[in-house]
Image (spheres, chains in turn red, green):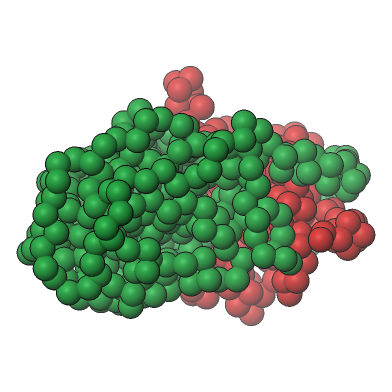
Length: 165
Length: 304
């Protein structure tokens, strides 16, 4: 028997954070909305089992990142079909810092993008990111370091590295 | 975190907050509606579903079940013996055109629903049910959906290939011609969660060459593309020697080595015990689960 009340509680508590994460991964608000809704629909379909998990929010993020990767592939195929393949625009968008960050994130490889989003949006330490992504901690540190350096250039910062803990 | 990046992250959050999400009851209603329409993928992994084809897309519609191919002689080898039953047996009851729920044990979440269908096309003699995995072998929240006596036949019309299907570059196994008996089971663990097991007996001495063919198939599929997802996919043998006389764990996915980023991905275990070979695979809407596949393979080998 599924418990709607506990599901609604989870939704209220986590949906905004998951929307932040989806936006950081996809760089598109509409796409992020679709992904977040899809994740919660799947969560509800499995709620009887999922509600017993210790880390439901991690499960949500996990599903969302996989769905996002799937979408990137489909989009890449779509662009290939249209003969419009190529790197993202080199011209930064006008607007606020958020749009600039999204633009910069979209230029990063997906693993770096995901690691940065987990680190800065959820304050996850390297070890937890490694656990969630299945990558060694050294790899996560590398993703964060490279991703941060790339963002620093875009955001007009010096590329001095920060210590990763 | 630097001030610049800090400010940019806050701006990203603020921008994301402008997007409206539906109330949770609406999402629940959509989930319930979808569940009613859901068709569980019953033979995920038997066919091209291994990569890219969405779970739920592979439905075995009712078709005539092939008669046995020839009358293979079952030689006297160690257990198991071949059941004196018809070599081809339909496995599902009369179809309900609206779909039928497969009931999972209490507390296991939503029951998967399957559309009416028949078993796959099979031939050869039926190996005994006693050598097959049971739902309990997979875990508490699994149900046996399909139990077919005989070995699977290729069925291009439904993209069914005798297991293990690695990729289209591999072609058919010549050792398939040396099969004499088999059995095939499909399990469901919830909506869009499934697993299957095939056990095949080969003519004496022909199972080991079949394993060589499987290795060659993985090599042929080292890099490939599918019609569903024309981007590079990879096949690798990621583990050996975990069960039986010889065993292979085959990974296929979107990265050269298994990684959390890989989606979709699948794991297939192939284990030989004498002249018997079992192929097991688990699948879900997210990715393959290597630990479950390994456990299934080890338990399956212990029963041979």
